[in-house]
Length: 60
Figure (cartoon, rainbow, N blue to C red):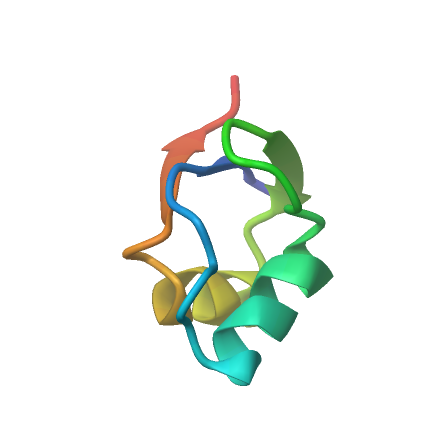
């Protein structure tokens, strides 16, 4: 399974509760924090919903 690195680049202030919960479920709390996940359809869907708050790259 492919791995992706997700980095939080913008704040969740003034964002919807849904977007805040998605960031929390991805394991992101602070700006600059990086987490690694498997590239499953559910994870990719969550990343797509908050794509304006995070950056994504493939893990090697």
